[in-house]
Length: 241
Ligand code: F6R
Image (cartoon, rainbow, N blue to C red; front, side, top):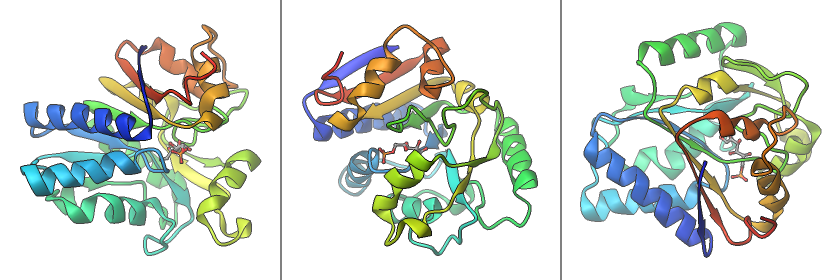
């Protein structure tokens, strides 16, 4: 895994933006997988700026999101559907038909996951996958467990993830306990992976990521098997390396 250590969060966001913008210019029909959470917010903000000021063109770009809470209404301001519209999609010229997220409103989550996986396969594979990492080592919502799933699936969120994500909700009881997530196999199929990490609370998991050990206790450690991963992290996240 290629590792780039930046001074701070702003530099992580800037570098992530540069990498994505360059790839969009080189391949205007690029297929990207996008993540939510706090980490990519700065990068999405800068991509919006590049669209507005420099005309970065998203008209041919296709996006697929990693995950979504389940069940959740798209209108709920904590849904990832809402997050993506709010932070990126409403501010750029992406075509609505080119935006894909797992549907947290689906009455049949198993079918939704199977359909999502099929749709990704039909799209012919993704070019670049943006990821964040949980303090517990999760990627997407592939939580530390004895076994990891390959394909898109419905999963239970761990107590730790519910607690960590409760910062976005009024009450911890409002945090959904399940999610639809791409599986480890789905993630590993991307041609290239861009993992953004910021903050000292991530330093212990970053140490595990680069420890030379692969374990289902740290799902992100499987990224060590992928041959095109760039990890962009700030000095705080890298402080235990
Ligand atoms: C979000 C996602 C999660 C986050 C992770 C880190 O779509 O898949 O794995 O990337 O929980 O979240 P933040 O960036 O809020 O620390």
